[in-house]
Image 1 (cartoon, rainbow, N blue to C red):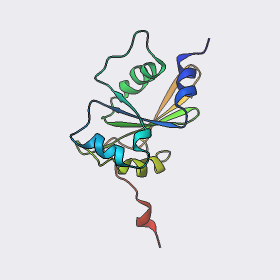
Image 2 (image 1 turned 180 degrees about the horizontal axis):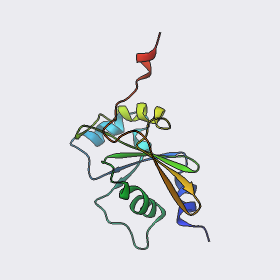
Image 3 (image 1 turned 60 degrees about the vertical axis):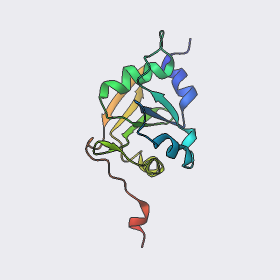
Image 4 (image 1 turned 90 degrees about the vertical axis):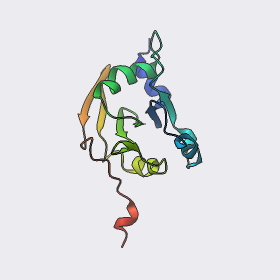
Length: 142
């Protein structure tokens, strides 16, 4: 029988997820205006996990939430790992147009990387939670 982790990766590999507890006024509308903005899976953490847990619920509630990262939280799902980066600047969510910039550098600039290890994950910390600056490519242009 396929494990919850296998089912999660089968469904969400090469996708992105935004974990949230509701969005600030106007945020969701702006998110949908962005290129690919409607393509992020969105998980409202105010809704309790299903019982028995779905693959998404199992990964989110057992492996991501215990890391206690701020939300909204961007999750980039690769073939065998997850990259986690919150979307805050200070205590406010940044503009949704920043998400594409964050996605471009998420493999180098993440708060946690969850590497699949057998039936679970190995959590590897990245940059400090307080550091969420965005490296815009055009600043480095000649």
